Image (cartoon, rainbow, N blue to C red):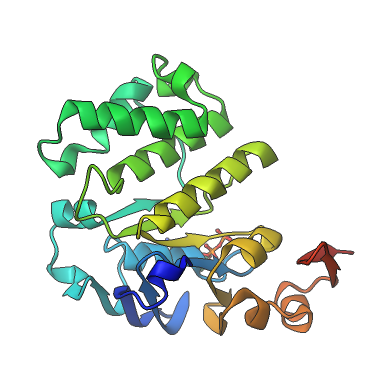
Length: 262
Ligand SMILES: Nc1ncnc2c1ncn2[C@@H]1O[C@H](COP(=O)(O)OP(=O)(O)OP(=O)(O)O)[C@@H](O)[C@H]1O
């Protein structure tokens, strides 16, 4: 987390989130500019956590977004404060990429078109989708479609367009991305966080989590087994036990790196 947000305010507070047996009670806070990774095996509850804190999924417990109970926020208030990129397939209907991106701003009211164009240009350049703007979403590869979805998510909570934006929720955003595009996605996530947006994302790439996350929640069978900094949570013994596979940790040029040796 950038130094300027070290003592920043809590954006998202989740208290005793639960949906037994899929998710047993878990509590955590996320601060302005903090990047939180949810890790754990398939079916451990990562998407369930994201869907409850998004305000769209059913579940027990209390979630507050900027001190407001999310159950009291209507859909357009939610859409202005947080964006939720779920795991999902391409919609069946055909829509142009540009139109799809602009639709992500529909909850924001009147935003000057010049500001929209500037943000679109910056995000599309970063994600390398500018040449796809005139296509329909049916004419994209899986990785291109994922980048368009990411662009739409970032646009919705882009601080210069949306002063109410606080939180970006991403469910496995690197799915379908090649390693170069994955690196670009992480740069964009860091850029959002550097502007004060709190990020909570589900992730399967443990080496990325080691390097990119400020805070990690490790889930297993619906329970949070550890929470804290990557180095304290992601010990070899704990990861081997949770993921039931052989892992080694090596140091390379000052960075820790996990090797999966099974
Ligand atoms: N709609 C549903 N109805 C009933 N159970 C569900 C439903 N969706 C998910 N589950 C179950 O809830 C548990 C948690 O699922 P969840 O999708 O949160 O896991 P996850 O950690 O995100 O998994 P993955 O890494 O595979 O995406 C799993 O046991 C799953 O089978």
